[in-house]
Every structure is written in structure tokens, then in C-alpha cells.
Length: 223
Image (cartoon, rainbow, N blue to C red; front, top):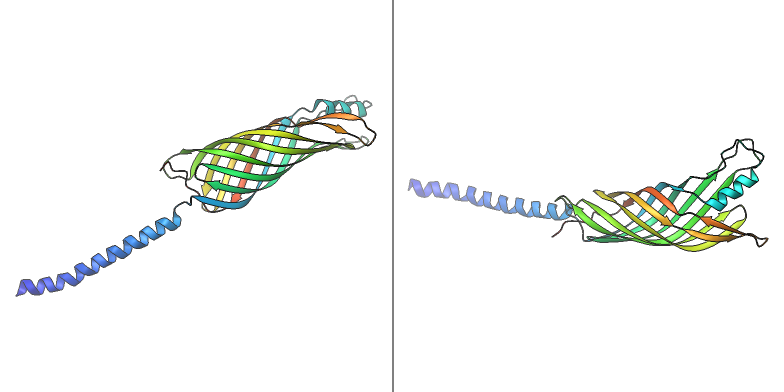
């Protein structure tokens, strides 16, 4: 009798614990799925960076134009970039249509003006991910793509197709995606002035940037 009563007292508690365990498991699974990475995501982004190049003909033009300023360093070595893009991301690859603007300025103090070597470059890039760690949050990537480079300098204009090769690291923090990137651009064309003169316009060189995009995280896990 006592044993039966004890069973009657324990059974509701046991059933309650089982129900609580089942609910906890369901909630945990639901939470895990909610926090788990997606297989596909899409979102906008912005990138800033800087590059190193040596546009020989452009530097020669500046040097000739500033021939009276013998002590002045007339050469361009660096440029800055900013771009907007749309990141279309899957577990193993991403595709990124982008519009990038680059400027190589030469500021002349006390001279007859400043010089700006500009580039506007729409294009499409793609990366392949190599996962690191078990969390699925991080991955190396390697890739590249093609861009149409529209360059201007001192009345010269030129358009040309160029290519980019890049590698970097993908870090995901919730809905924020951060990518440090090293890239090499092949970008060269012949510019023409309104007078029919020609100038080689060369933006080929190395570039470092930080990509920041906003979308749901995507798992890089191997399974």
C-alpha cells in the first residue's frame, strides 16, 4: 500500500520531469536552429582600403608639369578606395557584385594645382571558402573576378577590363560579417584627351581592404 502510494507520488513528478526534459530539449533544439548558421544569405556591404601602385606615365606627366618644383616629390605611390557591394553568400562560395571608387591624390603645396588619378570600377567577384575551426564561423577564402575600370586624370579618360585576385579571412559575428582582404589588381588602359592625345593609365598593384557586410551568418562547417 505504501509502495503504491509512493509510486503515485513519484509518477507525477517523474512524468513532470520527462515533460520538462522534452520541452527543454525542444526549446534547446529550436534555439540552436535559430542561432545556427543559414545555408544561404544575402545582404549589403561597404569596404574601405588602400593600395600601392606606380602609374609611370601619370607620374611622368605630373613631373613634367611640376618641372619648376625640382625639390618636390611628384610621384604617386598610394591610392585609397571605398566600395559598396551586395554579398550573396553560401556555405562554400560567395558572389559579390560591387562598385568601387579609387583615388590617387597628389597634393601640391604652393604649386599650380593638385592632381587626382581616379578610378570607378563596377564588377563581380567570387570567393571559395576553406573552413577553420569547428564553429563554422570562420574561414580562409581565395578568389577574384573582373571589373570594368573607368579612369580619369587631367582631362584624360579611358575604360578597360581588368582582373582581381584576392585572399582573406571571413569572420562572422551574428549578423555582421568582417573580411580583411589582400588583393592584386590588373588594371590598365589608354586614356584619350579631348585634343586626341593619349596617356597610359595604370592602376595595377596590391591592395588591402576591410569588407563589412550585414546579413544572417552562413555556416562554413564541413558537414
